[in-house]
Length: 581
Image (cartoon, rainbow, N blue to C red; front, side, top):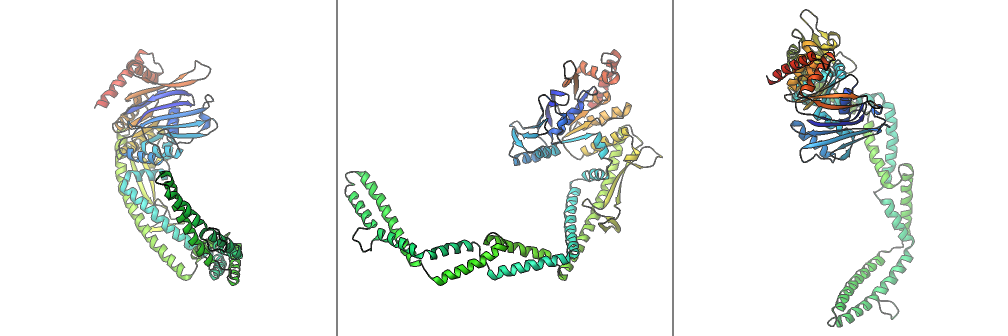
């Protein structure tokens, strides 16, 4: 859960800290006081888009810091992702996160004191928090969002089936696109293939070997300077091992004399014995060099015929490097790529027939899996509709019913016969999903965007969230004025449902309804200060009398009214009894 949230330099908020608790946290305040900035800050902390226009001119940057306590199913996933980025949590099981945005629009993210990509904040956010606002209600009107809601409710086995379907769909479309491209571009492919074959034939005739150009260059250089190399090696060999016409001693003999002389006095001074040992090593090294020089001299060849062969071979290799690459290794790589490309350019009847058979085989598997997806969605749709309908009854909509239609998608450019019906197919399956609301008996079941008022849509959204909470989901849920357009008994029921959610989740609610705020385990008030030259806002925790005054302000705009405070206290008492029950 989120234990603490600190916001500085964001909108009207100069610097404030929100101490949060388990259960239900409610945030209230006058219109324009900055309640929305709290949700904006949460969005920034969890990787949302940075808006430089919300950054205060002083100090020129906005910072949001949060302390997460990791627990439950999300803890291991978050810890693994954080460790992968090179960060780590504190010893007490908490994780510090921060996001900074400057007035120029630059953004930085930190986790566990380490600079990380903003995407890491998004990854953590997906695991630990779900934010629902009025924009989320609008998203719920989209068919894709409704399909996603049903798929999430259907459970992990269904999600595995969906992942399998997407992978199979991708393979099917890959083969189909490949086949279509080969047929449509047969002439162009044949021309390109002919050019590649010409190049491959030329390279095959020369048959270059890896590193051959450098080896030939070095050998040619040796042959061109064979006499000079022979003279140098011969003189060096004589100097080391003797055998020349002069009577001067060779290096091996001189080193041997020096070693024996030192050894004769080593009993007097041990230092001379150490030097003698080192000279013995030098004598051994000189012997090795002498042998290697003899071998080198024997290998030197001034064969003009071999040199001519090398010249001709290097000329053949240069012909290839002028056309295909900078060096021989590059020519070999070009040939390898050309062979792979030739396989991709193949438009033979045999290959086209093979691709068509593979495409048809995969199409059959896609249709079969799409049918399984449809059956799973139909089964989940009934359960989902029943559960949401039950929640709506508790939200002062006793006669309303939700139905979930799962129908074949209209046939389009990509279609298959699924369960005997030609259906358009996408990576999400072959179904269209539509949530419908029957507001009261006798009314037609209409799509949400046509059949739900603003207040009804708020309650449908909350009912869906309560249902999702029963099957898992992030441990922290944020609701930003989802009770808009609701009042009276429905407002009390929303507060009761949010309190029920708070039994197993941390819930943060930004609300203007006292009936909802009364159910809070912790009540935070955003207050605006207009005493200075610049308007600022801060957040404080209210309890007991002060909390009753805030509810009285929300009820009637009269925080000092005895009647308003009495009404607020009655509301708090009712909420307390509900929570206890």
